[in-house]
Length: 339
Ligand SMILES: Cc1ncc(COP(=O)(O)O)c(C=O)c1O
Image (cartoon, rainbow, N blue to C red; front, side, top):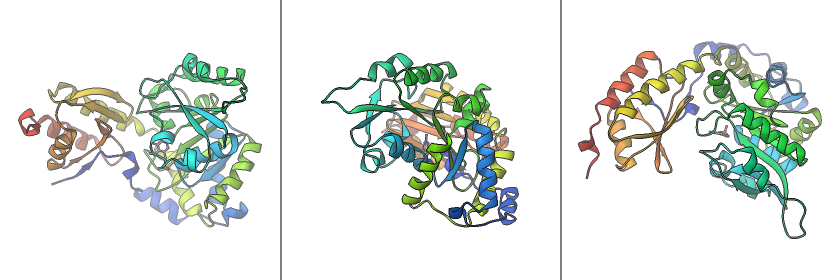
């Protein structure tokens, strides 16, 4: 039986072309800034984001932690949503390593509005921690943040002299879906991080981009976190390949998501709550563990996130696979999920 892995887009594997690019990469000592392939990738990222400087970092978690180390810290607050990755999936590094206090702004599956953000900002008080940063995440729960809302949040941030961090782990999914460029999204924040290792298909790494002064500080944080790496051009080459070859194809993942979502919307046992970019979240009156098991028996792997079922499309799934998955899901009947 064929297995279709819809657990996460982090399960993508390097393709033959990517592996060849990795094999052929020129390398040097990146801690000394002398790896030509890393430098080339950072230059590409700088151009794509429109920021002054870009830094290759180990992971998306590092890309979120470093800005909090620089702009947050003990006695300082970051405004974010209760759905954010920094709050839910980073082992509490926000508190344990950066010391920043997360303050939850109301949101619709992670999308905050500028009024709620601004209402959460407070001025100096002898007994309150200081609002220092705002974090947005795009995509969040697979949803594309409306660019106008991001701009309004940035305006509010500037009015109050705060720093805005954008967790753009899946910013290319947002861009391909909305037609808004990564540069335009990046302009709504003082720094942006994005992942090469998710839908873009590289085996590792993220980028952090911002102004030159911030990135100089970020380099020291990267080093202290154990992120100083030597001849990593071999991996950076995968990132260059991903940015050249795997951005436009994210559209395929979004089309596959729509196809599978149509079947779930018809299924009496599923209540689709979010269907956007490469992600589907659905509720059910039946135990999610039973649904996951019914899927697994058909070779379809998925996860639960909280009380919702989660399906994520990525490059391991082609057009035929997506049609086959839709048919397989269509065979699940309520009887199988009872008792
Ligand atoms: C929105 C978001 N931010 C950050 C990360 C962290 O990325 P990494 O696993 O590379 O640390 C993830 C990972 O899934 C993510 O979904």
